[in-house]
Amino acid sequence: MQIGAEVHGLVTFQVGLYGLAWLIAARMLPSERPAILSWAGFKAMLALGLWLLSQRDAQRSWWAYNGANLATLLAMLLMVRGCLIFLRHPPPPRAWNALWLLPLAALLLLPPSQDAAPWRVVVAYGGQGLLLLLAFFVLRQPLRAEFGRWPSWGLMAPMLGFALHNLGAAARQLWHWPLAQELQMNSTFNIAIFYSYLMATGVFAIGFMAVLTHRLTARLREASMHDELTGLLNRRAMNEYLRNQWHRHLRRRHPLALVMVDLDHFKRVNDTLGHAGGDAVLRATAALFRKHLRREDLVARMGGEEFLLLLPDTPEPAAQALCERLRQLAHDEQLGVTLSLGLTMVAAEDGDAEVAVRRADAALYRAKTEGRDRVVSAPAP
Ligand SMILES: Nc1nc2c(ncn2[C@@H]2O[C@H](COP(=O)(O)OP(=O)(O)OP(=O)(O)O)[C@@H](O)[C@H]2O)c(=O)[nH]1
Picture 1: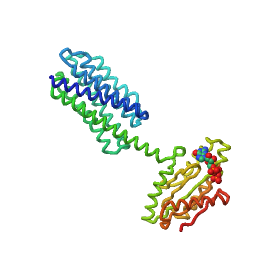
Picture 2: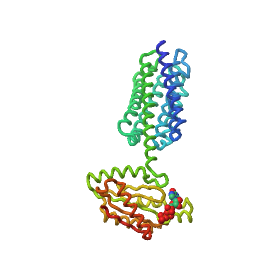
Picture 3: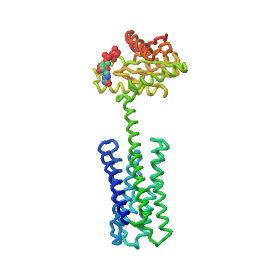
């Protein structure tokens, strides 16, 4: 009995600490705050439920019996809500929310007496089990889509385990009806349940911290590789792709075309339409490239009004035709500017991809000096 009380105290304290950790995380990560706050609430409610459970004695107070079950069910609801928000899952229909009002209302209204215990067990365990089982089926797919198969199983397995355990407990109560199958404070089984709660919430906390970090790292990497205004690759990312494509070209000798594009007299656009108008033209140019290039082509904004296109497996005549088409499309789609393009083919003799970039740059310069709104091709060595 004495050991049981100590274990209860420690486990409750530990779960409460997890809640505190989530609160700190919510302060540090504003983009994920609503989900994290739900999880902090989950831990707080669970700690409360466990503490109330440890208060069960012969007096049978409402708090120790109904209160403990209510707090645990609310904890599970908050946990599932946090997961739905975290995974950007649309909120469930209102009818589903109403479904959880039934066990909550029953737990509020039932007396804490021994006679009502079978009802309480079925409602509390059945409600929790059903909720966790539904959450398992709803959350597994989006979790897997974002983080992969094994992390999703690692996070969902404890949820499935608890769902089955709780449904089993409700079924056991129905089987033994009307003999109450309520958790007693001093039973070994009760202590095992406490430990498994601690383990599952630990796995949950560490697992979701890990996927959260994974998501934030992916977002940072995405931001560090893209130009904010147009959403195209930025210079840094393009240089990385350029190096990869260069080595691929050396290995396979597939034709690799490189095109430098510059908007003509862009300063005038800014002067007449203002900076915001200029930005809109840059975005429209990016959209034009995205629309008319293939998926495997790479487009970057190298800075200002200059873009670099990298066209794998594209022989020179095809690249030339594409450049001419883009130049014409700027007219047809009334971009508000004309395009000058410098084209070259990457060659193994260049020794370095940078040499090909400089050649495309020189071709672009010629396009500018020869009157703009044209394509100039610089032959590879
Ligand atoms: N709106 C907007 N303007 C930019 C941005 N980055 C650079 N610019 C402007 O782009 C203009 C580039 O001007 P220049 O380099 O003189 O070239 P240009 O007027 O296009 O003339 P040519 O290239 O010789 O045809 C400058 O006025 C820059 O302020 C941007 O992100 N948004």
